[in-house]
Length: 147
Image 1 (cartoon, rainbow, N blue to C red):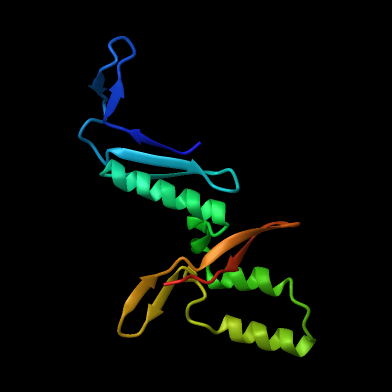
Image 2: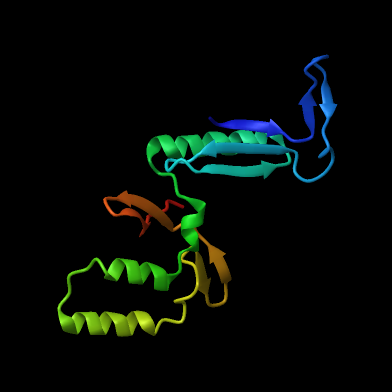
């Protein structure tokens, strides 16, 4: 179930009034939470309740449309993605050698796929990696992102 929780105030069960919690004035006030399609709980904190509700509504819409991208999927590096992907390809022996040589020589092998380094611009982050459920479990995959 999706919800937005006020971390600074709680309703007193006996009086019905809002009373401060031990977190009053500390950190971000509102915590939005929901369960992603895999059943994992996703939590994000916000200063304003309307921002938390907007984020929660957006995430629920992405889940309903099937365009939800798991934030942790972007931590997959190019080397990890290539190893998983190439193991499922059917290639001639010469192609295997050429692809492994090419993939092993890239300078960004240990950089998460979500991070792109562009000359003159620096590091930019993009939600480029998702994961799909297959018969062998969850696998990372590249997804197109509208900008």
